[in-house]
Length: 433
Image (cartoon, rainbow, N blue to C red; front, side):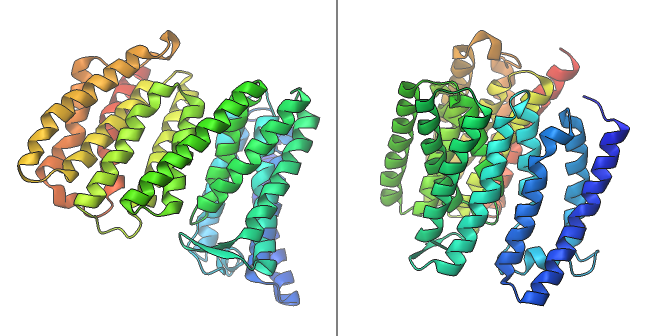
């Protein structure tokens, strides 16, 4: 990867164009009395359209990473009012959101991973640019059938618009940019439209700007070259996940939105890894649900906190694997094994806490079995039994000693502890190959 003087000039022009676009939209909005949602979505379309030109402007990911590394602090500066009232264009809508930052992260991740297949970058960014904007504007102006979601409400009309725009955009882009068979294009477009619409509905606080393009990218990367039978089987697996989680949600009084989001997370993991690699993530979610029932934490959104932290830790391992050009699936699983034990300890009280000993043995055994079951090429950073035990001990020590420390920000603290051992093993493996 390299950075040329021309790249530097383009980066500077784009960084100047962002506040210029926001200023223009702000002035036009004041002049014509636009709804704040209209102004916000115009910025969204402008930045998304600009991002769609990156494969033409830049020949490798480094300039994009530099650009976004500079753009994110600029966005925070605008949010904090350093550049006057420009931030009001994005943040006049009365809901807490870091959508612009999440979109920048999604652009960086998809551009870095798309490599020599521009369709894997263009289609996900096009979906979040066009479909999300159309759904928001139509839902705001014409939505009548509304339903509650985390942080507000959405409309059936907006969801339908999102589905059809995504379906049409996917068909057009696949026809122009892929060599897939016609039947595959139709099936992939339908799968993408349904999946992305569900992700958009179940995202919160602007996280659709991250989860929709990343989810679309992962599905495309996995199924673009698959046959109709594989696509049909994958759709059936997702529906089975969804049905099972919704039944469980009813039994545990879990919010339907959170239940669907759990199904989405597990399905995306399954789209990347083999079936046995979702065992430990599933156990981590189950242990969280048990802890949430036995020892409720003080977070109002405990389920969404877990989804956010679990998704970000998964993306972090994916990024580390790409950057190091090695498989980190063993460390990914070790993270979720530690998280599962941490949550389980919080769910055990009194003499039941003795169950942590056999649970520890089971978690360590599952981690070692899953790692050995993976294909040989994915066994890099393969921890031995002692390393697994030490990593899990780090994850469980504080929850055992001071469980009350996890009554706030539970998921963040549990996963932070669970990642200490795997990150150390990763760093050691990179420095001492």
